[in-house]
Length: 627
Image (cartoon, rainbow, N blue to C red):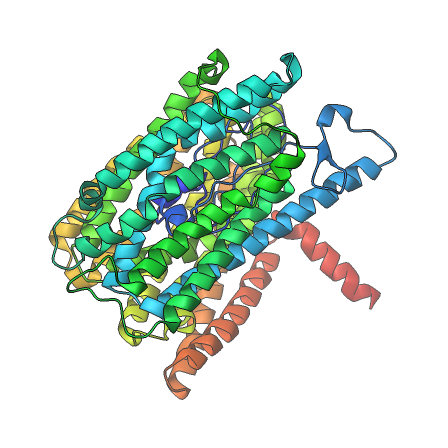
């Protein structure tokens, strides 16, 4: 996985995935209690997509986020309408009104997540329109990857995996309601984050070198200058994650869910100011006093700072004390073993990200940013559809794991994979058929047709990885539901070995103009490997997984998707032959080809009697008959 993958579980920019790393997000750990994931994913920078969220003990975090913020997922609780909620134990059975309150709270956070994804995607589009696909975008992407990666390695895993369960326990068992524990937590976390931030800034040139090397196709000087301005985000990310955990422990979920949106809005304002500045960013020489450089670096960092600060009013209303106290509490070490495996997951995924980044930045200028935008587009279907499937299945799977009911867990896992197949495979086919029109429609504003066509080809060449990515994430959740953080890390090791070897081969054998396409293919292929390895190890753990039904659904859906993809491609080619090249034609190809192709896909699936879609088909048929 790339940094984005780590963020899958992270968040920096859907905060990110919604952070924005070109790799897979790190799956959050599912605890034994059914807990639906509700998180915001605002993109704050590509780091979210560049890194992925870490697995969270007892919670599920939004994975699709290649952005820069960490998402906080609330426990199931009844909302009181003011951002607070009752714990599951105290929820009343009052004829359904409690469930309706929970649904309203869940719906509110789902809206926050959707808005976060939209605004996170929006600022990345504006960035492409503003600086194009080139050295500036590459340098920003590398520099903006560093804070989330370092935060995750420093303390991100502890904050997302350990703190909430221990906070809740301290509030219930301590005579002072957990006050002293919170103060020690603030002191320890603040010290680690401050030291880590300062050391990272001192080592900024070396950190940039790790991701970029000395190639003449990139600008290590610009990336280093931006890194000095962006690395303070480490402390901001830590504060945001800690504040979110404290609010979650008090059953206050609204501010953490909407905080990434504030982050994204600040970045959008920053880019508007950047565009309004006269002249261009100077690359030769790079000057720290450059107004463009300062605006971009300080503005994006202020976005993450705002993401943390916007949660402070809600924290004050809870009555928590903000006075830090130095000292260690043994409860901070409670889940040390699991946390170490999770940090290992993050560290290994960073090796894959480093290998891809160095190869890309050594090839054509703009290759790394094009790769990141390709990954961002690939994550959208999963973020909007696949993660919803995960959200619905995970509580059932976690409950089955807690009951040691492996048969029911296998059924739930199979259902999740089949639902992901019928929802994501058709979209994957459309991306393959319409990759270039999609890129032209969204990005052909600044750099002409060369970069957008390259992005479109990379999207088409890697779209096959959308479903394997979803299946791999589902398998990771299954292991976490079994309280097994070791196996997902080992799966990541296998995927990273394949990724590094393929990246090295790409750098040595592939012409520079085709490197970004080959790297996008490499990233998707590693998810195929991950899904196969996960299948084998789940079989070893749970026994036969009943794969026959999944393969039957996969085969029927694949036939329908290929048929729809071919039809979409034919429509796109026909429009290309009669309309002039440009964004308008790209939108016409995307809309008409996509709609025609999807209608054909679901029509063929209906003819092939794909059982997973039967309820939807029956409902539509019933409505038509009543008319």
